[in-house]
Image 1 (cartoon, rainbow, N blue to C red):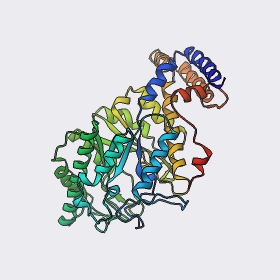
Image 2 (cartoon, one colour):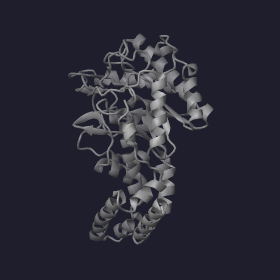
Image 3 (spheres, rainbow, N blue to C red):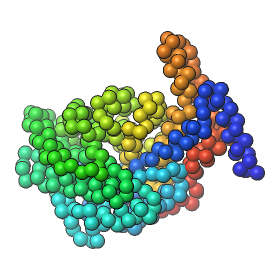
Image 4 (cartoon, rainbow, N blue to C red):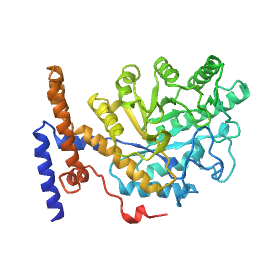
Length: 412
C-alpha cells in the first residue's frame, strides 16, 4: 500500500513538472550519476592518525566537543560505512595525508608512500567507492606560518617532497580503482599582520609548485585551492584566488573553489562559468560559512541552491568535481554527514527540476518579467518537492535519498 501511494504521489509530481517542460525521470537519472566526494575528516575533527590528540594548527579550527569522535582507523571506516547506508547514490571518499594506515609507527610526511594507504584502497574496493586525496600542510612541527612559501629552503624542500609523494599516492589510488583521483593542494601560508614581502612569498610559492607539478601522474586530476584568510593569518594569504586561478589557467589544472573561502558577500556560484572557460575542470568544496570559514554542516540554503543551479544551467556537471568540506565537532558526526549530503543532493535535484528550457527562451526573447515570474513559480514547485506530505517523497525515494534513523542520529 505504501509503495503504491508513493508511486501515485510521484505520478502527480511528474505531471506537474511536465507542465513546466521538465522531465522528472530524466532529472532523477542525472541525480543518480552525481558522486560527492565525502570528507573523511568529519569523523574525527581533522585529527588524523599521526597524533590524534595533537593540536590542530594552520589557520583552521574544529569547534565543539560532542561525544563520538572517531579515534582509530577502524572507527573512521565504521562511521563511513554507516553513512553509506543512510544516503542514496554512489559516492567517493576524500582522504588527507594524515589518515594513512601507519601501523602505530611515526612516519614523517616526507616519507609517506602508497603502501601506507593500501588498506584504504582495499577498503574502497570492498565498499564500491573511489578515492580522492589531499596533501596535509597543517598540524606539523614544520608547518609554522609558511610551508611551500617559506624562505628556508630546507622547509620548502620538506613540503615539496611531501606533496610530490601525496600526488604519487593519489596516482596509485586512481590506478588501482580505475578512476582518476583528484589531488587537492591547499596550504595555509600567510601572515597574521602586515607583510612587506608579498612578491617574495608568492615567487617562492610558484617555484615550489613548479617543482611539484614537474612530476606527471596519469591517474591524478590536480587542483589548487585558494583561501581568503586563515585564523591567525588574517592579513595576508599567499594562495589567494588571483594567485591560484592564474596558476591553474597557466598550467591546465583545476582551481578548487571552496564556498567558505571568499568574502561573505561573494557567491561561489558566480565564479563557475568564468573559471570553466579557462580550465578543463574545477573542484568544489561545499561548506557553509557563518561569518567566517567556520565549516558548518551544509544545509539547503540559497548559496547551495545557487551553486547547484549554476552548474546544471551551464551544462557543466561532467566538468565539476564536487566534494564536501566541513568538520562540525558540536553534533553527531554521522548525522552531520547525512544532513550535508542530503542537502547537497536536494540542491542538485532542485536544479535538475528547473524549467531551464523555458527560462532560456524567455531570456532570449527579452521577456524578463516572464523569466522572473517563472523563476518564482519554480520555487513554489520546488517547495512542494521537499514537503514530506507531497510528491517529493517519491522523488527522493526514487533518487535513493533515505532519511537517517533516530538510532543513528543518537549514536555516540
